Length: 210
Length: 210
Image (cartoon, rainbow over all chains, first blue to last red; front, side, top):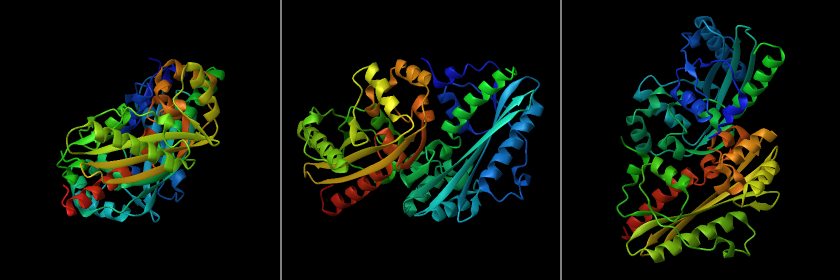
């Protein structure tokens, strides 16, 4: 069956510069088979002086893509991405343990937070690139104690920024409403990714680079 | 692993009064194992004089749940649900053929439409019930001819109201943003379903009906 990614007619390898299993799964859903190359960048030391969240995630995404471009020895289009969860002007990272996961979920309860994802598409060897980002508001209902307890005990919150996944069974019933791109919350805004990639391929082709 | 539905401690059968494979999948994701009983109701002849969309979907959902309650010969909680897609005050149903599917997608292109889902939880034998509904705005980007063509040829639009599924590879990159409950667009607003079911079970228990 034809998948949306078939329309791109991508002729060179496509590399995902991310270890996120959720991003890989979303790309596969579109019909892409990304090669995974994990960028060894220290996110905490990138864009530390950037206080605009959209810019910050895009800068981190770019650092990831460039690191991977320098690591591989073949031509490719590389996708770098970074997602952050912001509540009251504070960035919620991945919780360090179950205790912190519970604190995060209690903070998110009955409140609206914001998810930012920046993505960078980078072409090797030209090092031309294209960026885009999305901002999505996410409103949680009031969570019950036993729900937080059971969710954290399931282990799922521990590898997720903000300690939840909207695609989880628990996350799905915690989130009352969203405003913006849904897939941004999962970690990869698919509409902006796909339209950017389509434009990028066209541009590279018209410049004779693909 | 504990699933969110385990917290409900549901002691009687749970029946889904819908043939939708997407609703079944969402319920299973929460950890429920619904029995499927398809309601043989003629949706076109229910609530024909109801022009409030939220009320209309809730009335149709109720008719489905009641039909199934009368069909089965055991005690259960029955879920009825109905979803409609509205553009410019017109309801978009499931397309009758590929030609109509293309017309619908062209209409949705570069526009915002609204998805309504009403759900009804019905207890047999008491026939007590609980309802809720959700309204979500969905904004499409401008679609390209080849995208509409390939999507319709894939066959996926034909069994879907409005001729798209946001969980499809094509639908995922067509939708720019949503405002409201995401799972409502898939066909079952999980947050309102789960919180309603939790309250409903508590109420039935306190009345000695469960």
